[in-house]
Amino acid sequence: MFGKDKKRVLENLFIREKPALILLALKAAKGSVYATILSKESDCTYSHTIKILDILKNYGLVTFEKKGRIKMVTLTDDGWDVAHNLEAIQKKLIQIEDKKGSPRAEKPKPESEEPSEPENPE
Image (cartoon, rainbow, N blue to C red; front, side):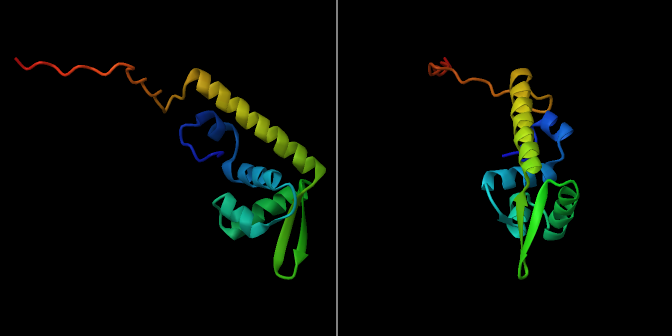
């Protein structure tokens, strides 16, 4: 998934990992999600997740609904559009890297189709 692969240089360069993971997790959920689930999906502490969600809320990208002690988070229409576009950007960056090759990663060498014969020591 997004950001986990250290070989994805462009993705990590242009997109902040944790907020992007939170938006993409919300989009994938297709509805309301517990904030604690988002913190696990994005590998963030709960408090860091809430800080990110507060910023997203201030920009009108998510809404909160409290049910007792549990905070449910939902993408707004604008939030869904941003998440959708973010997903498209992520896919395009991956295509570019796959085409050009990552500067940090070497492409795996294809293995020979025919088995090599052992050398004769004589």
